[in-house]
Image 1: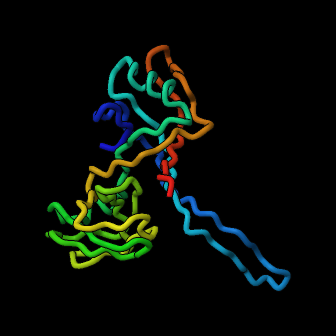
Image 2: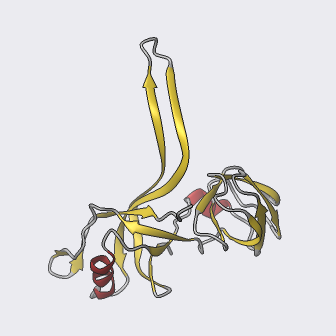
Length: 198
C-alpha cells in the first residue's frame, strides 16, 4: 500500500487518479529557423499528485498531519510503483548496490529475478529516490537521475518499501473538508520530493 507515513505507519493511502512526474529545470526554445535548443540542469526531483483516503473513519491523524506539516516540514511517504513494475517484477531478494558520485550505473549483488525498468529505488545511505531505466536481472542497473552520493554495498529498496521524504505542495489544503458530513474529501494533493542540500 502506498501513502502517507506517520510514526512508521500509513495513515492515508493514495487513490486514483495518481500522477508521478519528474521536475527538471530546462531552459531554451525554438529559434526563428525552428531549430530547438535547450539546456538542462542536473537538478531533479519527483512530484506526485494523488487523492488520499484516510485509513480511519474519523481521519483525525490525517487532519493533524495536514495542519502541522504544512508546506515547510518534510515527512515520509511510501513511493508508488508503476503497475507494470508490480506485475513483472520477479526479484524478491535483499539487493546491495555500489556506485560512484554522478554515475548513472550501479553494480548490484543479490538479485534473484527481474527488476523491471520504471522501478523506483532508494539506497539506505541517502534520501534521494531514483528510477531504474532498463530491465535488470543483476550485475548492474542504469538509474535516473545520476547518483547524488556514492553508494558502497548499500541496501537497495525497490519493492513496496521505498520511502521518499516529501513536502506538501504550497497549494495543498491545510485542513479538512467533509462531504456528506462524514467522509473526508480534500481532492488531489501535491507531494514534492525533499532534496538534501549538497
